[in-house]
Picture 1 (cartoon, one colour):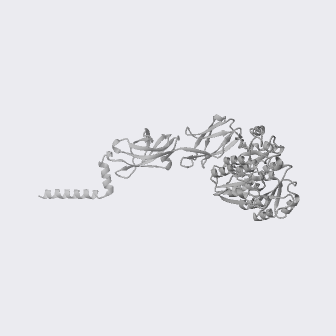
Picture 2 (cartoon, rainbow, N blue to C red):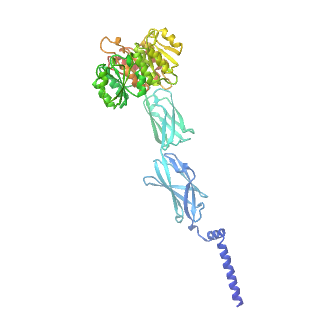
Picture 3 (cartoon, helix red, strand yellow):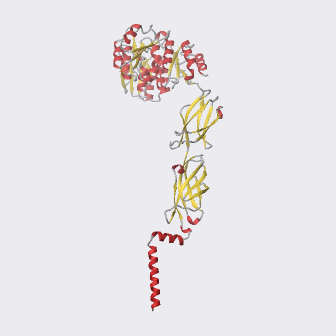
Length: 539
């Protein structure tokens, strides 16, 4: 009986020790691991080491780095693994994976189609399971700041991003310009995702940007100069031409400016108003509304009509014909007063500059029109030897600081200049004739950093004295509104020749003129003259 009692005591002690061991976590795991086969350890989860591992760019060789965990205990997985990647269309590609200590990499991964891919990591031992994660593949995109021009030393900025707009830094891009005789060049993007492309192509064609062997962008190489088709070549009067010019700049317009078609003094200051209102200038006979003009107003979907000039310029019957529209008449007793009224709607830019032209020197006012409109500056009118009261008041209302006189002393006398100099900073831009003054305006205002384009060539016969019969040409006046909208400017010239001052300006500045167009029919600017202009500018 004593021996049996001793055996039972020993067994009881062993059972108590076993129970105590099972209650200590560390000792319990150790016991489990020492007695459990590796077959019971399986893959639990996958984590990308960085964002670059889960978001790839097409065509770029990449190594994908991941961290693997295991179950039953959330620790790193240390076994051997394989990898597959399934593309958006279901095609599966095998990859080798290497690493250890929970960190693995899948090298030499190059994917060529944007979309979501499935990465699957499988343990070599099939009993240890697998895990999956999603890889996003994005396009690479190039953005350029400027065009490439034939026979020019182009230097343009190119930016490289992915299709979500993220900058691609320190990436290699190949620029293939072999089609344009520009060779092939390799660039590396900076930390802002950009590089500077320098190329001097010698012929038209395309330059391709390649990333990872795939074309990701194309930029055309264009001639340095392009001559657009003539505008209004078949028109026979000012009303028809104004409509054709309007169609070039406006598919629709809430506002329209209406001017008389036979005398332009009331509309000389209208181009800045056109820019302000985003309104084309249309024309009509003084006594009755032209049906073509009314049809164009309706086609534009206009709601507001601004008539420039009093009832002597555009009759009350014309205004009465515009039923269904909101009609505003901007008018004074004379053209000076109308210009002053217009200025109250236009104002001046930060330089507080106002342009002053003789109310009878119509070409000078028109020559400045597109530039003044682009700047947001007013055009005022004067007599040769005295300032009209309305003009003086407008200068005060505009808080003007600088007054630029357009034309020589034959059109704005020294007495006016002296009167203005007492209160304003005054400059004179005047030449020997209208074309000389026009070229001086161009020389002072042509922006060579961001050149105005296109240059519109129009008839210079804008005064009633310029035509032996019929009406003067409104080509330049209505085109000034179009030029202000498109960022271009207008050059007036005789029917058959280039004035020497304009010829000089074009020769020395043609590198800044990328595009031009002639406005009006052949009686305004002849076909031979059009060809001369194209030959001069097409270098």
